Image 1 (tube, rainbow, N blue to C red):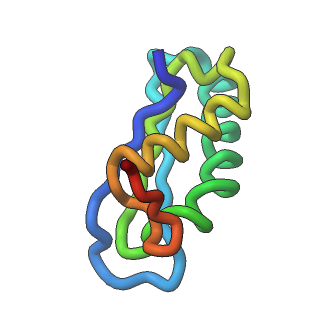
Image 2 (image 1 turned 180 degrees about the vertical axis):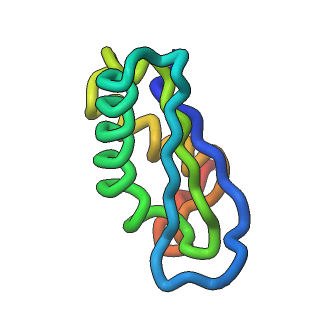
Length: 98
């Protein structure tokens, strides 16, 4: 099971920076667990999204309970793959597929 779900929508107005939102349901656990998931998501988003995501879109990361036990490097890789699958990579980061 993935550690998060990535949602993408067109930005309402042009923004100089990429906007990212985070949400974690109470189903994930108590406040400590939810905040831990949110902190992990915020960190991987800060590492990946500014460099690889298109600035004309808004992003929301929905945390899942699996994010508590998931390896940090694996979650970072999953975010990069999710951006690639949704075809929302920044123009300079588009990877050609054979």
